[in-house]
Image 1 (tube, each protein chain N blue to C red):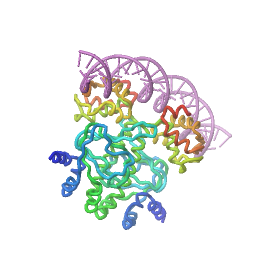
Image 2: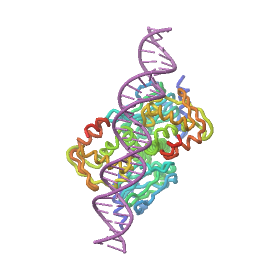
Image 3: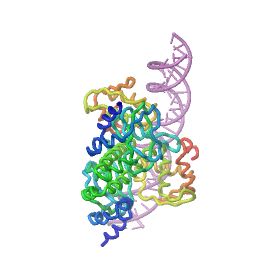
Image 4: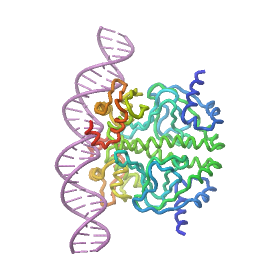
Length: 234
Length: 234
DNA sequence: CTGCAACCTTGACCTTAGTCATGGATGCGG
DNA sequence: CCGCATCCATGACTAAGGTCAAGGTTGCAG
């Protein structure tokens, strides 16, 4: 059964691995899996949350639509990442909408099950809290980046998160299309294009969805500069 | 004893009220209270968290300092609000620094106590999760505002959060100095000044630290406009 | 192969906000 | 009352990024 393969991936996710051993099988056996087409909604803002979600394959974005129609991308999740933990466990309404940005496979764990298990094992609460804290942390970092860095610096930072090494040359593949990257970084596609152009002087070559970084350390320094200085270097 | 007065305030805080009745006294009797001068640090980024904090009096800001030296204000807490819940319960390091922005009184609940209580009552985990989720939610809203609104619109939004009513005229007092408001809204003090000037045409008068709103509903509409449209109106 | 659509890049121009410099108001210690 | 510091407002200028329009690639259906 194809689901066995999916379950193996699920077992490797951060959330599931942090759960107490003895409950994992119970949770997985009650989870269900669903395929989403590119652009399909997984849930909408203000809907009541009834499950926790784990990305098994593809990419999922969380976003908010402002009253004026502008869309703000809040986060983008890859295989093995989970979202909606806190809101599901509390039974709140989602503060964001979720959409598959590529064809995607998502596992859903009913929150009712989680709640009842949590009553017998507080460790589950700690696992959920750990995931929630990570999301909190990533939002704080996004805020810092938006408030303290230029567009080009945010792009550089984004490239660095894609490349494992901390120094030397590195080749990374842009994981989704540029419109989405721009949204995630709080800019328009045109600005992203121009930011890429500027990063040439910091040793970055973009060709299609491949980015060649001449020296990761140099790029890191670029992100840490004062915007004005960074500008002068480029 | 002055602490009895503080404890009464603590009992009224959202976090404490959401805790199970029978543990509240235990927690309060092990909490300690401390006075902070304006500008004094409460904790620093990357320090290990050992307590949950509840503001009893005054104002506290959480902020990050970017590698380039720029400071990004993440949130500002008033009397009765709590912070550091998730990070304390997990024993992580703080992702932000905290500082008293006025003379302030803060209650600290040792996380060790909370952790041991949580093992016997999972409800405590849910309370912590609720607070954490609220913080998460507020960060998501900040992100949306930064990405989708102009400075003047964010200022308008800020004024609306200070005024209870949803329509009609309203007078609010700016709770802390304008440098800090500017930081919280992701702009420079000069830009805040100019934003205030622009809001005159939306029916807002600023005099010292008093803001007079002619019509809250009109101001709300201003925040929801497309930036370009909002501009034309003004 | 052709035509079309999706995606990306580029250029010209404009809006927004940051920077730097100045000056006014307020408050406080001496 | 004077001098000084703090906070805030304003003006002139610069920089960063959004908007609009045009054009290049790529890939796919017919």
